[in-house]
Amino acid sequence: MKTFNALIILILSTSTLFAQTNKKLVAEIAAIGKADQQYRVAAIAAAKKYGSGSKQDNELMNRQAAIDKTNLGKVEQIIANYGYPGKTLVGKELSNVAFMVIQHNDLESQEKYLTTFMQAADKGELDASLLPLMIDRVRTAKGKPQVYGTQLHEIKGGGVQIYPIEDEAFVNERRKKAGLPPLQDYLNKWGIKYILPGSVGNPNPKSLYYVRVEQALPAIEPVGGEDAIYSKLAYPEQAKSNNITGFVTVELTVTSSGDTKNLSVAKGLGYGCDEEALRVMKEAKFNNKAGEEAEIRMKLPFPYKTKK
Image 1 (cartoon, rainbow, N blue to C red):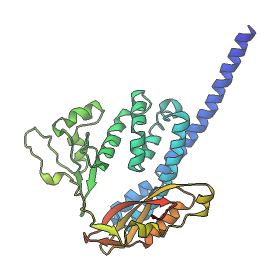
Image 2: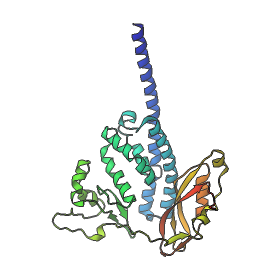
Image 3: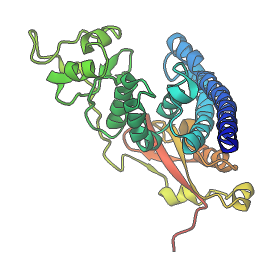
Image 4: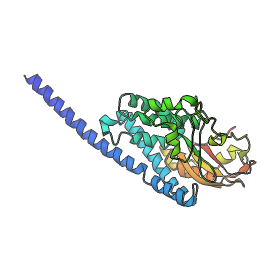
């Protein structure tokens, strides 16, 4: 009887501990979800009012990018400790927060956790209808055709185009299995009159699709090469004392004259490295043989070691 009573006490204690831990986790996820939208909604409004890529839009998104990076670190730690924070751990309303945070970060993070999302969806911990968004985003970022038709590209002068779709004639069958509406309905919201290939009225005009034009190198290259930029990097004392090493990925626009603007950290290290990377890239100069503005990403090493 004593053993049985001790077992009951142990179960109750474990349940209480789990409830306390779960309550704390729910609060943390809720705060992360709120931060994920802190400047994003305002940036969308600014883009509509002043134009996508405007000063107002960029300022808000740069602020949000810094929050996104912080959120990513928090979510990665949560996943490492508990697994995916889905419906069982944080409830249905908050089960998509970790997914959205990673979706708002770089391709490396999206690829890293794609399998985790799939497993969570299979277990009912994550809304399965969200998966097509991440699958398509990863594929289009890598220059591959998307599977579900969820990804669009803004074009100059307003409007959007569809990224190419793999096996497009059967896209609606895949969307239906994933719990998505027909592609015609989805694209109609964007003002696109879409006809499914193989149906009456086909083909769709080529202008409907966005085809990435790969830039021939070296159309844009740093003046003096990458080493000319790397050699200006100072290894922050805070990073050095904490033995922080790796790369900071900076996203920026190279102007037609070879200057840089719209700088933001796509993936950082912290400990002063992010600020140092932005400082150096702000002063960087490029040979822009294309003669048009171009968005690029560049990875800067910390610490930088001169090649012998």
